[in-house]
Image (tube, rainbow, N blue to C red; front, top):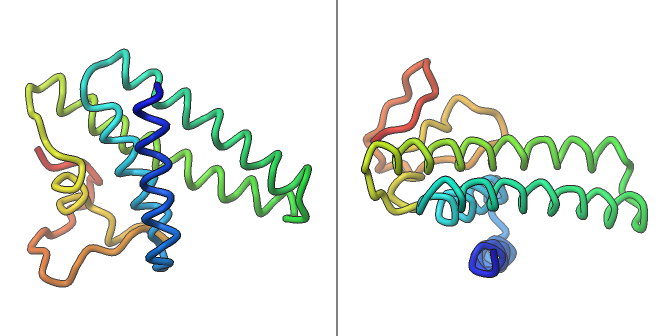
Length: 136
């Protein structure tokens, strides 16, 4: 769990440095995928940690802070969906015997058609299908 927290913190630092629109989605997916890809137990801990982090964010932003509760709930909902997508993909790849690096997975991830999601680089040759599945 400590390794997962470290990866999440590193992704958050990277996100804050870049300050790119949509990077929050990338950071959530990358950290969750990376921490969940080594087995079902890690996937469960990673997803549980993500849920606790989002609960903490709601408390910090809206209970202790001045962010409207609805805005915090919307952001945490978006982040939780990103977390679930990444943990699902990592678990699926692990069960299929595919050891795919998180950055490579994200490079092929179908996110073009999803509003407010990380945008792929223009040079990516991946074409989105309508099934929103992950590439192995």
